[in-house]
Image (cartoon, rainbow, N blue to C red; front, side, top):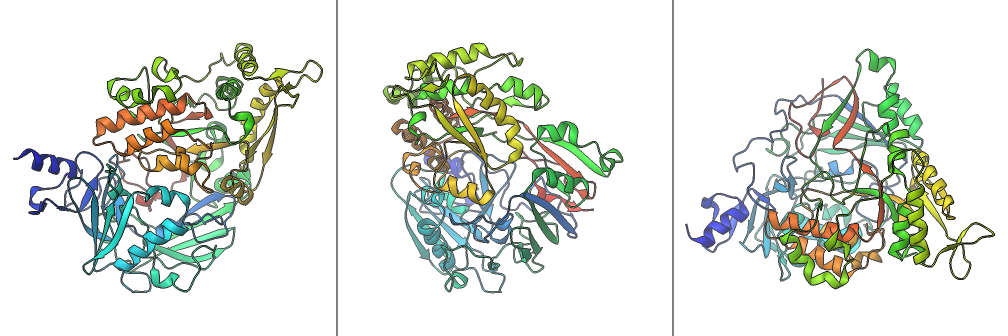
Length: 595
């Protein structure tokens, strides 16, 4: 087989019969790198039960409230579960790093260099009002989300040069020059919205009018801020597609909202909802000793997964002058005693996070290897020297609560940055005598027990940190406006990082309201590393480039890292069946069913 043809087939992972004379390939799915797991004749994913019964209710809970059914804009707090209303062009499998298969699109065409992609819509695809899903819907959705939607849509679609209709049901996206192999898959994730429904409505406003969708569920009823109920569409057009077999097994899905996490937990113990994904180590260790657990009506299980942990931590807002010196950020990190917290608050359940891609092969460890150095060396003058000479590790203590050595290092770093303890007030002040003060903004009161010991250690440094817990709506507004000093933030990661990193760390996103660049990172070297990740031609180079980006982020002290788990902790009432296989991405609740 000629080398060019072999390379083409390996990169697109599809049968040779699909190769057209002009070198364009037509496929049922796409993989970011390597082979697709599922061939064109697959009948269902391996982690579902194709014979799962469809019946009953699934009752869930969420903390906070909601005031909108429009999850695509900055304004408002959208209700949980709205993604079930909308089909995308492709849908991802949960047992591959990053592969997608046709949903609205029955076929995908693209050349070897992935400079464009065409999606061919299924003729049977329908909105819930019976009208067909059209190429015009796809084009309108793309342009509307890019111009009026959440900021990450602009980051995601930044390299799309043109979108156009091709034939009766085809949509072609042409990309700007450059290498971005992820772009066809990103366009595959496009939520397609009904152009005709939105024609008489303002897309940029919040709404509690149940929206028109094409997916497996639609809004059945709701109580604003308190409950939303979705009902499975009995004649859903896509219910028999291979990507949907064994999924969406509940007739009704209900989410109740609770303002107080303690009340929410008590509601679970009383049977007011069915499944709780537990994020409290204390609850997991001590909270499940109640009658229904003891007699077996409630099950408590940990399910291992291979998802990257991402980064959770105390995130600095570098837009604030007091946090711009990395020595200050490093010093404040010395005041967080993870080992004491893990022992006394978390029952030794957690592992300290040290990487933005922990729990995966993407995490940078040791010193940079040859492939990493190839992308790091040209940026040496723009990066901290430690990137090349040391493995990043967060501060450690013996867990006794006596962290004098850590605080001593913090005092030295703060002094080097121009901060000294005033002998009269015992407060840390700058050269003008201005005290070091900041606010830690929270949305979950349960986190106060973690933050307050940290605040006590900061007091020992002369730093005055105030904790403020606000409601969900206010918290969301302040995040969108970057109106905070420090927050507890999570940056989730996938097994195949790419264009979303622009929204996390890119300079352009730093001043873009509603972006996830909460830290305010504006660094040309980081921008360059992000682009190298996006352009990675194969898995080996992607891993190396992500590790290089990881090192650059680690040594900037953007966050004080917290902790992570390699399992999903799930408590559930014993009324459910589930498939025998848990995929690498973790538990998929949409594959469970009511017994």
